[in-house]
Image (cartoon, rainbow, N blue to C red; front, side, top):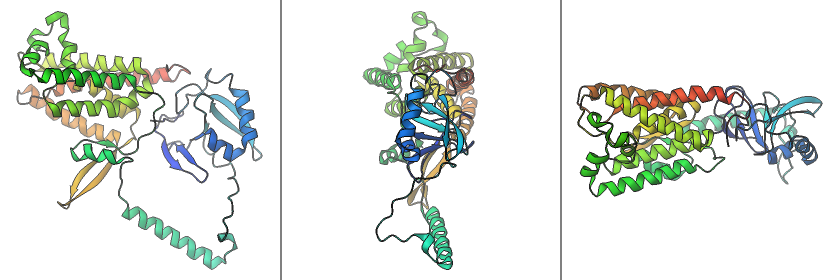
Length: 376
């Protein structure tokens, strides 16, 4: 997810008149690639900017919305006015504060043979054409339903899992997320051959929490009670984990998962009334990732499928913060059932991991304000 260097909001990908831009809906800032910048202000001017900033980029300034590295602040005279731009030569993106991007005159549009220039039409014809365009846009908005940006996302949605409707490209390979997912899958499939005995031996049993020197706090993380338990946990780990790792880096990402798991296990031990039943699963650590994702990317668009008129499926879209609040509500209900002894799902572990995710977001959010503090 790309974030605004001014207010931290998630940037929205939009198709502008001259190319693709990333826009902040909160403060109006714009992030553009070097290719689009060349079309806007010309190759010579872009080359001059890059030659001045390439040796000092990353030493200070606001974090780049793409890679979080410190941008170089560059003053440029465009169309008779002085603009202060944020330049990142590492990922070759430039940041425009509002309304700087809009103040740049668009490049002349090439004339297509046979195309009619609206300015050459009579006033009555131009007004009729404008009304027609507005009507067509309104009709299109009413007819179009929100759909995810990839067809495969329909599969988890049919199974009742939320999907990201529009995923921004990653700026680094999520090695920690993928490696941990593979390890969890391998250990869980191995355990499926003798799940009952493996669970009793390596699951976290509250009355025997310090077996093997407390090792079961970690071994229980890699065990799952069945295929759906495993697949659903891996889905949430990968979908939300890759964006959190892309923002944090692998080192901080692993620390987030580790602390969320430990605190979730401790809360389960402290409040679950059934001290002899083993607890397994990676949900506590994943809950920390979900909480961090919801706070870091609150406006990310998520969606689910629900049955429409008992026949058709229809997409329902909502922001990440809304989904997180509903998820917290479910965990609250699950916790009441758990402490009453009626539930086999440890919502307490989920809430423990959630608390860690929120706390680390607050802590690392403050660190982010220091230029260059986010490690690569």
